[in-house]
Length: 130
Image 1 (spheres, one colour):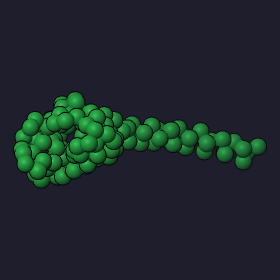
Image 2 (tube, one colour; image 1 turned 180 degrees about the vertical axis):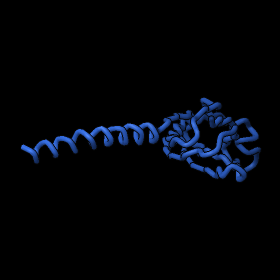
Image 3 (cartoon, helix red, strand yellow; image 1 turned 180 degrees about the horizontal axis):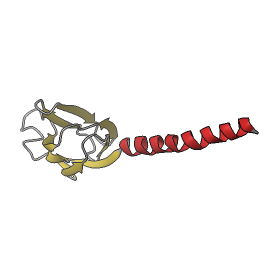
Image 4 (cartoon, one colour; image 1 turned 60 degrees about the horizontal axis):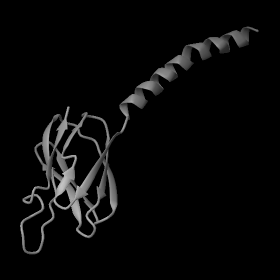
């Protein structure tokens, strides 16, 4: 009887602590999901807002049938250096975790053989990290 009471005491003491830990780690690891439609020289949406310190899962859904594109953020001061390709008519998914709050420009870094870059044709957007 005494052994059962001691076991019950420890279960009641430590189980709630385990639940508290599980809840805090679940909320800290929530993934922010974003889907971006990639068309001929545009991103939709072209303005994104996410929270710092939480992973962001980006799905690029290309509806441009043959032209490849990418999603690029190149901001060395903030530590952002991201480039992910998506083939024409395909999807591509990647994850990153923004650490620093701020406003960042994203763009397609691809360029045609005889013309302006995709970014120069308007394939740009803004990422706001709060």
